[in-house]
Length: 290
Image 1 (cartoon, helix red, strand yellow):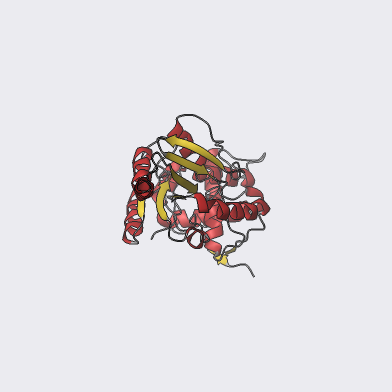
Image 2 (spheres, helix red, strand yellow; image 1 turned 90 degrees about the vertical axis):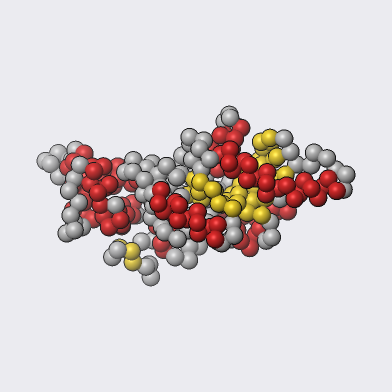
């Protein structure tokens, strides 16, 4: 029986076949990797963290990079960085689209891999590369990050899940090689919250969940956490008594999403609202706190 979120039974109907293949491929290639960088969505750091990764990387060094920080609540991002650092992980914030934080991430990669260089130097081997694996869920910005590092579009980058399907080694500097991997999701979400957060941020294809239900749940969350920002974005009054349906109607009328006769075009409003949130047009918002 599906779990309820804000009174709505939210489910995701899917099994990503190519994700299983990607997981096996990632397991194989981890043997050649010295440092793992997990790129997380700063709006949903918990939901975008792959639970399979901990068991796969073992004792390898891991760096956490929070991407899309321009779309996330800065206070929440600061709290998440503190959380990861207290857990003993190197954690940084980046904005792959604008390039902010990418140099700091490169420095962290080199520092994390220095023990590998030192080990090979003791064996008389010079210029041995640090091999880095970058992992993350679909549409989190892995290819955009690599493009930023290289300064050119060598890795495919599109704003839809599932674009990168094959792994590729990319030389990103002297003695520094990076492995781009397909975005990997896991076959089953233990919590319905995880699936919901991945759905509304664009990690899951839109045809496997009920978009109107997702929009309704998200509206109620934002009404509670960011009522002023939500109201200001659409020029509407967000009131305590508002339901998800009344908010959708208010947004539809404010944006002129109407059918002939003046009825709100609910499907059009749902698409508009989910797209606005996905691309950060409602302002910096975070759905999870540490």
